Image 1: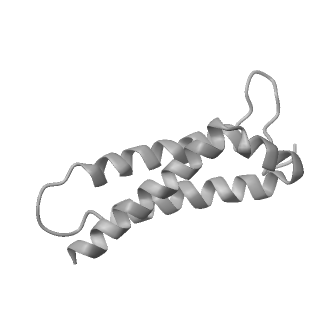
Image 2: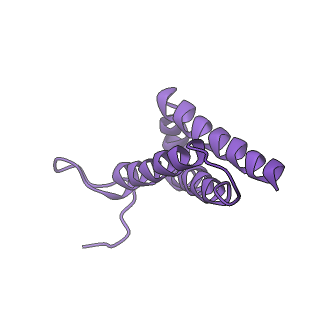
Length: 101
């Protein structure tokens, strides 16, 4: 059971790292110029996947702080994804409009 928790924690860290690398290297922006829905789907997959995997890595005995930090960080990435793609900012419409006016 410990190996499975460690594997979930490692996968969660990998998902979060890929998301951060894609964002900081402007990879998401380049993907978004071709297809904004693919960039959004990739961001949601990486952030929600990291969140779910970090929740799965909590179960078990022993005190470990890393899974809780991963949950917090992946939750912040989910909020960041919503901010980037779904919310307007300073009069600029959002990239993805779910509801048309």
